[in-house]
Length: 88
Image 1: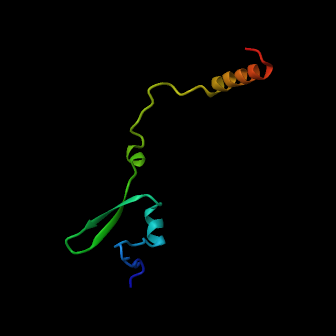
Image 2: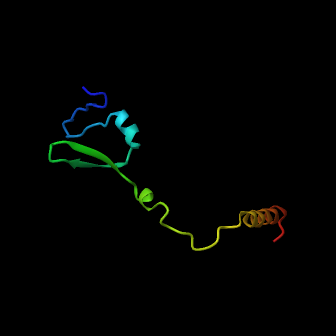
Image 3: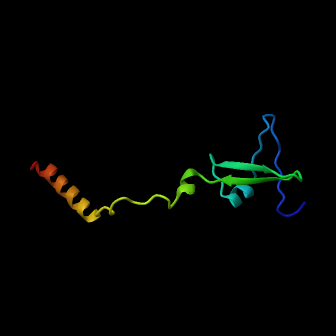
């Protein structure tokens, strides 16, 4: 058997377990989807299907300026201080 050939057994429910080496190489995690492409020569290619997040990464642009976290922190600190001291 060639070095990159791995085997798996078909269960009674026609399911297979992908060998760990294949999952690692393809970066597959539980719940990921894969696509099987059957070639004319009888070979089957297994490819991961990118998640919707991965497909759309970088396509969405912010519509406004980023938040000023220093301003947010000051607002929260002021609100907490008022709550602690009872001053509103």
